Image 1 (cartoon, rainbow, N blue to C red):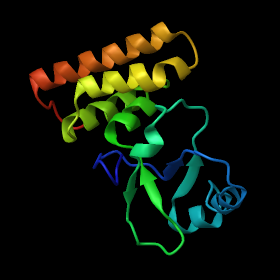
Image 2: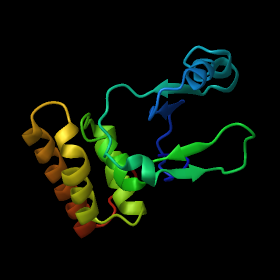
Image 3: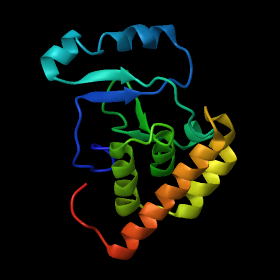
Length: 155
C-alpha cells in the first residue's frame, strides 16, 4: 500500500502471499521474519499472509516492482482491484481505509471490482457468502459516497 500505491499509513512488515510451494524460498524468507537479524538491523520483516482467498487469476495480473534492482529477487504486487479483494474477508477499519485510498488514487472502476469478486473470488471465500456480498456492497457504497463528497482528509 505504501510503496506502490502511496498510502501514508506505514508498517514494519512486508506481507508475502505464497502462490506455490518452494522449500528454498521458504527457507530464505524465514531469514527475514519478525525477530530475525534483518528485522533487528533494518526494522523491516516479512510477514507470511495466513488464510486468504485471492481472486483466481490474480497471479496473471501481478505487477513487478523494482525490476532488475536485485540479482536474485523479483518482487510483485497485486493490482489495485486484487489488493482490495484480498482485504475483503478481514474487513477491519484499516482495510476499508486502504480500499477507499485505492479508489481515490488509482483508476478504479467499481464494475471491475464487482466482476472480479463475482467471477473469481466469491465461491472460494470462507463463511457465509451473503456476508461477503454485503461487505462488497458496503465498500461500493462507501466509495460512491466518498466520490460524491470528495476527499474528506487523510486516511
